[in-house]
Length: 412
Image (tube, rainbow, N blue to C red; front, side):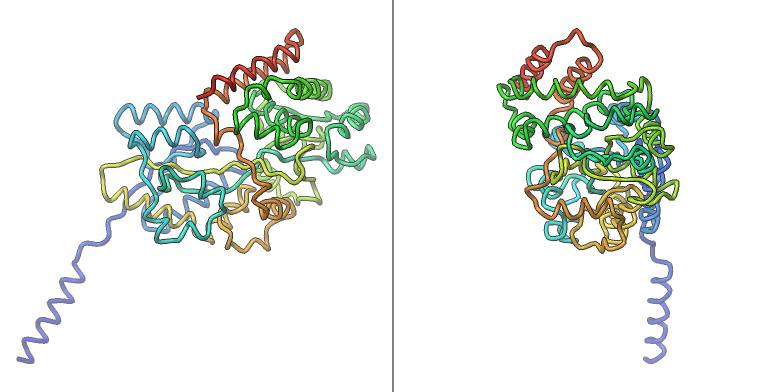
């Protein structure tokens, strides 16, 4: 009998030894985070995914979001959705979820208690019909001002807190041979300046009326006219930047050729990539007219709905790993964002991040960017109208305001 027990035990060990291991799988990820700072942040996510035993397969797309979204659309059309793709929550996410094109992350959210640990705006915008429908990566903002401390020290002026202050000091900066406000060659870069001006002229209530409440009368009214008047005044203090990428504009601040750039906090990754210290080698603050307000964007990975259970499990493993406190801290430090979790130790984050962390402690300061609430078509029309006005003096402020009002009035 004892001999039988020994044999059975040995057999059990043998069976265990030859049992099928957990099946690892690839997660192919389409993204367009290809600048030097962004690439470091992507490596954080890839390393966290690979540590689960699965493999991050990188499908980086140069040329920005338009090209990346086209590739994603073609993948779906061909019946081969990507394992994950970079984006933002918003109307398109809801449309895809309604069409059963996205894998939910609710099982991970339940197990990891996301409702308890994520910032409220993240929980709010990542859910579709009560289900988490993406992996949150980080919290960023579009209303950051990056500036050359060297230029401001040399000219002997202070960085502006308002656009009125900027207009007062910009001629001195220009006379010293520097570009006061550097802008790239894209409508979305011009739009960042526009929304900051809009907040200064009309306040955050006006911003919300236009972009969130879709108040057509407000969008086409006198406050918008005044916004456009101030917006146009800023152009004389730029160098137009036709064809310039956003990170090329950032480089002009880094190299002390331009005094100020308005750009999201991903720009900080470009400074980080050169080992420059915030508030020492360069300056940062919230954009003129927006102090105390965080124009919040949420970087996410959306997950394709896959037929292979092993690949679906790999997606869930990736979600758990990316939203872990450790990965959140590393990603935020690399990309220049702040974590989506409230329980991450941020004491080691830099001076710029501390401004963000302090600002978002008050939920009233957290305002969604238009991408989270408007369809890409509506948002694109507004940006195109604003850009045409910026470049074409024949378009009057009243004409542009009326066009924006009509776009908001017809928004779905």
